[in-house]
Every structure is written in structure tokens, then in C-alpha cells.
Length: 185
Ligand SMILES: Cc1cc2nc3c(=O)[nH]c(=O)nc-3n(C[C@H](O)[C@H](O)[C@H](O)COP(=O)(O)O)c2cc1C
Image 1: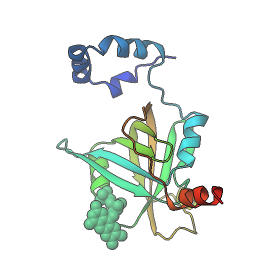
Image 2 (image 1 turned 180 degrees about the horizontal axis):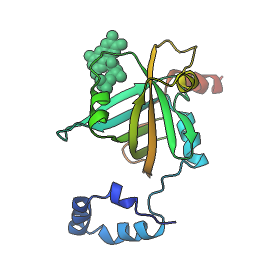
Image 3 (image 1 turned 180 degrees about the vertical axis):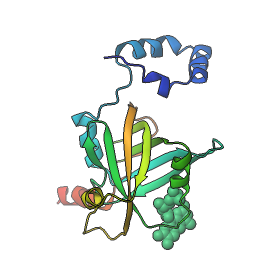
Image 4 (image 1 turned 90 degrees about the vertical axis):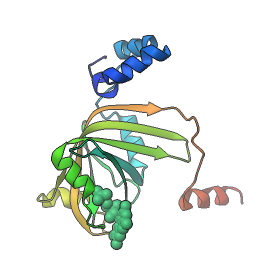
């Protein structure tokens, strides 16, 4: 079902570049047909459940972009409902750049990589940090994971898309390497 979420993904300048480089017609067709959905489908939820890290993009009041890595145990990003993600934010270097950016502008971006299967997903949305919701913090806390949870990051999805595999070199984490070795015995 098409929607107007393409406005989020394709700025007027991006569309102008598509015209200039000859890809506008096919993307206009894509906007008319599938568009960019905001709902967290079971497939997207399954992909998210396998992740142990993400890159969080935010923007300062001056428009400077910023990306920071966030990590945790596999599955640390929780799906709260069909439009909402959340994860625990751990004690860090106390620069609070992402927090400050979100105070000024709640637009945010999550980039998820699955190096082993060469998959990547980009998610546009609005995000906020929450410190005073003990039930939510408890839900996001993994007692086995060695980190101090300071707050929750709650992210409302506005559009998402899957990228192609191109130029992703497969990389494997220690668990995946152990599985591969065990399979060769
Ligand atoms: C002791 C300690 C030192 C850290 N030093 C750095 C650092 O120098 N640079 C950095 O980007 N992240 C560092 N980190 C990780 C960040 O603190 C963490 O990713 C935090 O979430 C960053 O949030 P922000 O980028 O929104 O300020 C450090 C974490 C800890 C616990």
C-alpha cells in the first residue's frame, strides 16, 4: 500500500538528483506501488532480534550529522509494538552527543548490519531517551550483560528499507565462527 513516507526518504534535492541521473522514473514507480512502509513486519522483527549492535544517526541543531554505535546482547533491541523499537542505553563517556541532538531534533536513523548474511536495513524515525520508566528499563535490561543501564532509547519508525548486498564483505562473530568450525568436524 503506497503512502507518503517517501517524502522522508527522498528529499526534493534527492529527487532532483534522480532526475539528473535518470533513476527518477523507476523510483517514482516504486513510490506509487510499494512505497516505504513504517510498520515493523514479522520479517523485520526477526532481523532485529538477531542483531547485537546498531548505528544510531542523529542531527545537531546546527545540522551536523552524528553516528554512534550502540551494542548489547543479541536481541537487545526490543519491538514494543508494530511501530516502536527500544533498547537500553549504557553508561558511557558522558559526552551525551546523541542525547543533546535528540533534545534539539527528534529525527533519527538506525542502521542495522548483518555482515554474515550480507544484509543491511535502514530505518528513519523519531527517537527520545527515557530515564523515568522503571518498567521499561527493566524490560530492556539483560541481567547477564555487563553494562550499567542508564536510560532507554525509544524509537518510533516512520519509514524503512532494505539495501542490496553490494560491497558488503561477509564477517563472522565468535559464535558464528564456532558454529562453522563445529559443522566441519
Ligand atoms: C569509559 C568509557 C570511555 C569511552 N570513550 C569513548 C570515546 O573516547 N569515544 C567514543 O566515541 N565513545 C567512547 N565510549 C563509548 C560511548 O560512551 C558510548 O558509545 C556512548 O553511548 C556514546 O554516546 P554519545 O555518542 O551519544 O555521546 C566510551 C565508553 C566508556 C564506558
